[in-house]
Image (tube, rainbow, N blue to C red; front, side, top):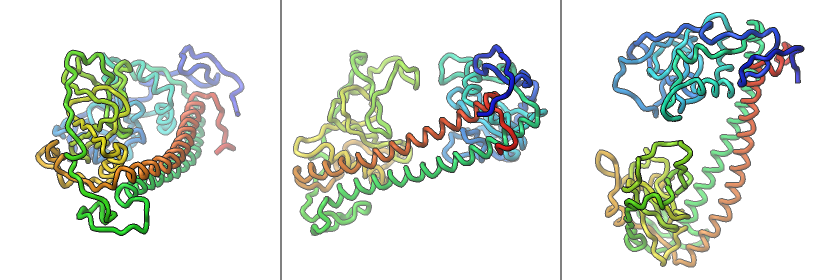
Length: 419
């Protein structure tokens, strides 16, 4: 690893020692704040993301106040002031406008790509957060008055360009590897979804006689499977925890199913008390009967006791069927948006009574159990492969962060032969 000949102390913990010929400056020396307000018709809206500045994302929360935005000029540096958007920053690729929660800076006297890497480095992001103010971590804000007084280490302009060129080259290579891994993970998840669907709608015997189900997303089903309405296999459960809520573990429904939420972590918004929450027991189903386009998961099978928001619907499962089979069926229905035709109203919901009137084709309990055993055996193998690829991706991202931080703080010397 190349290092500079001599280093000096900065007095700032996040930087540590820096090369002797690098100089310390306050951020404000290299930027002018741009605070002019414009509308998003003359200046197209931009989004400030972890990946940089892009055309406004289609799924971003939008305001009706399009006249109350900040002007951004091409090559301006924009950084989100909110702690819950930590790391969202970048150089504007063109003129446009951004939300008022962003700090827009006109740079001068330095290489903009170097400063982009510096501001995205892990240690600077933490220092930026530390200098902010607020009453809670997810409402924490760092404004220009605080940002401009943060000290940064700046090398000569030629070294800035060397560092940014080196990081462009290395991060591009890393990012391409990450994209390949993400593509592989996506394919594995699609394989997992298809496997579950095949099992819960076709069974395990490829030679079994089939019949029409009358449901588009299911297609044909084994002829010996029988039709049951949900009300024959599920029953509504609604037990409000009331003033005993402190005795219950807080649960949540998400992409990983029913999981525990940690109140003490400070992450998330919680009510003052949970008296209106409902009890959930091990083996019960938790359904989100809202529009599946707006929620991360429709169903979860709880593996523990606790409480969950009353916005969800909780069901008990009959002992005449396999809860795991029913869960896998509705997980598949969720993935293929099989409930979509049944949503109604402005909020696109399904009333519990309507849901209980819907039906499902089921084999006998013995066959359900065999199917569940087969699904869990194969999905375990797929999940292990996904976890392996996830670990590879995380290691690459950690290496990327380390590479950037080492280069922009002078822990590694970048020379022309490294580019």
